[in-house]
Length: 146
Image 1 (tube, rainbow, N blue to C red):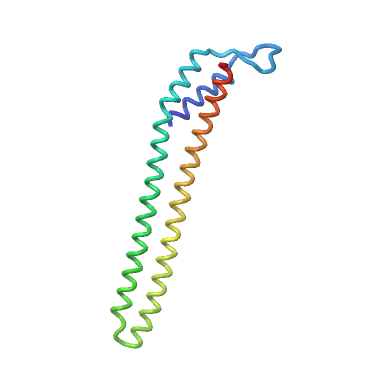
Image 2 (image 1 turned 60 degrees about the vertical axis):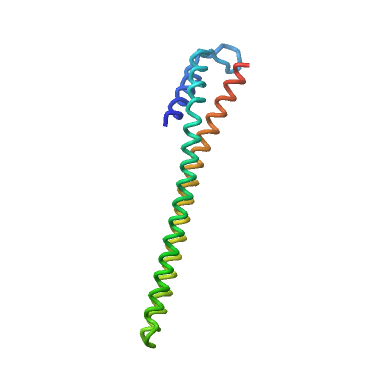
């Protein structure tokens, strides 16, 4: 991700800056280079925000597909139950199988939903961390510029 590279460059500039003796940790950095990096970060932020939005939309799509798949599995199981109602022994076995299928489909649907939510949450969390780091660096640089 280019934004992370830019932030690393900015961090390297600050870490490698020449310290001013007896100034309490202040340093001298190339103002123009820092401002250029900040400008590049500003330009990249909308792309990352768009990426986060796409991830959220993808999460919703995956959840909808998982829900639809679970409903289809349940409908199919119910259809199988109705078709096997003819005889007593067949009916008994059909109900047992249907219950197993329904339980498995509900379990699978739940696992799919949890997995997609965790995946989407981890991606959004990472994007949030990146954006927070970028914002903190920008705030810090603005403070230093003031």
